[in-house]
Structure formats: structure tokens, C-alpha cells
Image 1 (cartoon, one colour):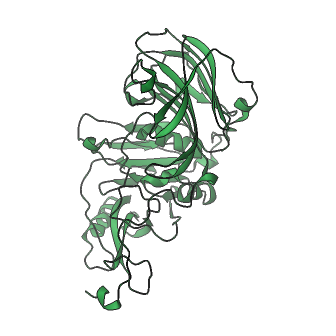
Image 2 (spheres, rainbow, N blue to C red):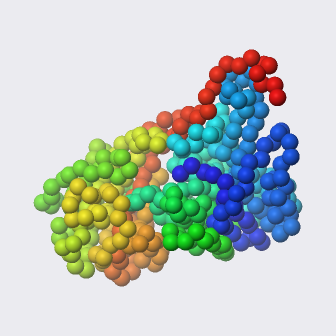
Image 3 (cartoon, rainbow, N blue to C red):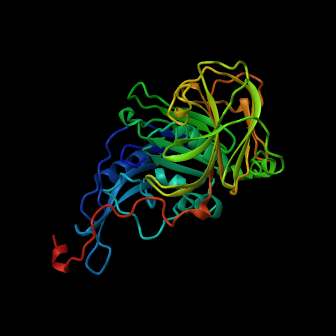
Length: 427
């Protein structure tokens, strides 16, 4: 999920614009001479009277007085820049939580909390893997009280839990903020899926693994959602699950992996039922009814409560209903893209130890379910509400327990550091 050049966004007269067409911005080096990329972005903003947000590279010179200065005498940052409608540079953000593959970049010594004001609300900005973090992602929203977040990303889609549009829309709902997500469109790297999401709805999104064509998206948004009478109320994610007894059923638990995390699963053996599955402090409750129980598809309820340690370190609590890849239970948790079983009813809840839970409902083909088909109740249940049978692929409550995280989620500096004499920094 490392961020890279090729994402830009614009805002025009209160409308949000998210552009996924990829082009190479190149690298511009402040303090290292001519900066044609910034000039082009500035002209795009000024000539079209829009705000432009772009992801580029930024390098900063350093010297021997800095003990952490890399051997090549410069820091190189994964960077977002923001130009206002007059073409002025009004914000710059250096990515703090680097993904495993970002060995070409350094991270700043301290997390940057970057916001900028517009005539249509206050915006925050951060990049890709940062969205998993408390700092800066949650800090910018909860403490700095932004109305909207702009989010350049190079997000590689990973089933069942890390598809771009489902995760990003769930984050916007959980944080109760507008999110404009512009993803690199690079299908050979499984990168696609951009969208404009609000606290209560998916306004528009584009997910295309068949072509290399980009898509320009427009949506009318409430520019200051916190002031709206319809602003969603806070969800007490463990209220329902903590107040009921575990469902008693004849079940055999088994283990399986999702993205290197060992889940505890139980199989859904009938077309209707109630199940509880627990791991450590987390118990997940599911009630459901299928239109029919197919013999060629297997579904399982899973729970995970632990520290994720591959390509980053962050603490998770997850409840998930998913389709297994085959009828072999050993494939539960493996990626699968389609489902034919239809669920007429479902209700999923968990005894979460966090208030940051991201609800996802993914249908066959990786498509998002329209909001009219499901709801998140104030007591923490993710339930159907339309009565229309849905081909559910994944139903999940993805919880982040930030207080159990290490200080930084991502990798350390990728470039080697070494003590150099002052003359070695000379051009």
C-alpha cells in the first residue's frame, strides 16, 4: 500500500472531485533548483479556480550536525502538497507511517498534523498507510475537528478485509467525516478503487480491475457535516454484544488465517442460526438466515483479537462473516471474489474494547452494498434492513485498538544512516 506519484484531487465550488487517471508527476526537490511539478500544479489550480492536492516526492538537504542524516546527505519524503484556487501552496504533509516497501523514503521525526481551510470547510490530509493510525489520522479528525479528509493512496486490494472502497467508506462512517480517496489505478499491482465517502453514505466510487482507464468522480457534499441535523450519533460498539449471553449451538471451532493473522472460526452449517465465536477478550455474535444453504459454498464466522505483525504493527479486534474459498475449511480466510448464497437476514456484533470500529458489507464481485440494504445501530449491530436477499461475500466489524499499538505503525528509515564528515555533504 505504499503511496506513489499519480494521484490528484480537486475541489470546485463546493463539489468534490476525485481523479484516478494516473500520470507521472515526477519528483520535485525544494531547495534543489527548478521545481516544474509544483509550477504545473499551481497553474492547474489557478487556471481552473480549484484546490489541487497531489502526491509527490520531496527531498530536504541535511548535514553532519544531524545525527540521523542519511548517507546521501538528504531526507526524501513521501509528500502531499495542496494548492488553493489562487495557485498558492497552502499545505504540505510528509508521510509518517511508511509501508514495508517504501524503502526509498524517510519518515519525519514527528508526526505532522496538517490541515487547511477553504470556503467549503476545513480539510485534513494524510497518505495511504496513515489511515490505519491514530497519529495522524484520528488526531486530525477528532482533535483538530476537520470536516473532510483528502487521501492520496496506492492501495493494493487484498481480500477479504482490505479492499479499498469498503475499507475507506467504513473509515469515513466510523470517524464521521467526509473522505476523498484517490487511488493509483494500476491493475497489475491490484491497485484500484477511488471514491467520495461521507459519514452516512458512499457518494460515488470507482472499482475497475478490467481496464487501465481512470475515472473522474463528482459529488455534492455537505461541506460541514458536524453542523448538520443528520450528523450520525456515536455508536457504542460493545453495547449490544456485552449485554447478551453467548449463543449456544453445536459447533466445532477451527483456525484459519487472514492476512497472516490467526483467526478462530466456526462454520455456518444451516440456512438459519445464531452463533458466537470468541478469541481472547473478543466475542462475536451472529444471527442470520439464508435463502437456501448451498452445498457448493461454505461460510464461516471468525474472530481475531491480537497484534498484527506483518508489513506493519497494529492491534486489531475483528468480527467477520465470510465465504470460504472452497468447501474445504482450510481455505476459510483465503481470497475469493464471488458468492451465490443470498442472506435474507443478518446481524453481527462484538464485545469490542475500542470505539474505533469500521463496518463493512461487501457483496459478490467486491461491490459495496447500498446503504438502504443495511444499517449500523447505536448499540453496535451491523444488520440488514431491506429484506432483499443479498449475495454477501464479507460482513465485518474491523476494530482498531490504538492504545495497544507501537509508537509508529510502519517501517523505520529505509535508506542507510551513517556518520559523515562535513565535506562529504558538499556538492
